[in-house]
Image 1 (cartoon, rainbow, N blue to C red):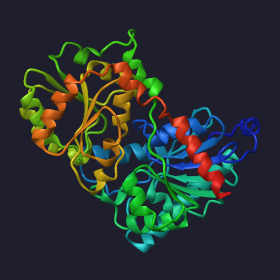
Image 2: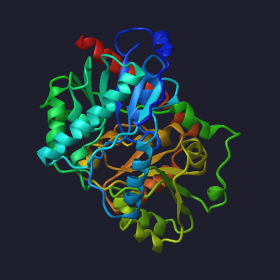
Image 3: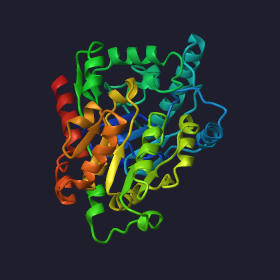
Length: 399
């Protein structure tokens, strides 16, 4: 497997430091080419003063025979042959391979061996030493304490074992990771309540927002994309992954009630939702736009009259802190969401508990008098930089 040669001068320029400054950071997360998530934003802030080896997704669930999963497998195989690449200053991406199963001891041992070999080789090529191991993907718990790390941080942003098709053995690996970590960060109060029993050094840091980016929705020069520019109003919008935890029946209810308006869904359809989303075929005023680049999302938000977060209520979503809600707010949109604890605490968010209440809350959001500027300002101080500052304080408290 070929690797790019390291530029050690960059390590020297950063210099040695403390509390996530001048460090080598391992980041086990989702694929770098995916939509920017909390991990992406955090690492972009940290990369200003650290070097980051971003390890692309180690599977948390068993693949299916669906075309999307098959394409993903072939894409993984192709990218495995690519060298470690510096995708942004001080962020290097490794494409690992592993078997997406952890229930069998022999398979776990094989995965640990092959993943260790790949990550250690990349570390050697980049000159990484005594790295901070920051794990966002619980499957990477297989490698915890085996990479010469100076600190082990588990940054848990979801109830991963509640995902559809979660790989066998994942819960055991994650529980061990909770216990072994020097520091555990969670992004929702429910996660804090559920996970603190594993490790007393478990702390809550709620998600930030890329406020400057989504604030662009208020700029006069930002154009509404042609796909939605002339749609009948109101335009009730959603952006993000169209997964199986999205309530598509609720979306149909919205479309039927606002039959003279439009419902716009911007995002990729997840494999697990491909059957569920077919219910929208009977709703002619629902517009499935597909995935769009992150750079274009402020323009779509500018064309929305209200942003929606219609999640089914279950173990997974009650522990979620949906990033899109903060992005809608930064873009100046009132938000209507299912009644999730992490949405309930935010201003300009209207939560509903029933389908009838859903419609009334959308009508209330459309009629509310707060300006887009006022709504956007309400989330201004929730930057990713401020979240990294919180993380640094917690790391320092443990030294």
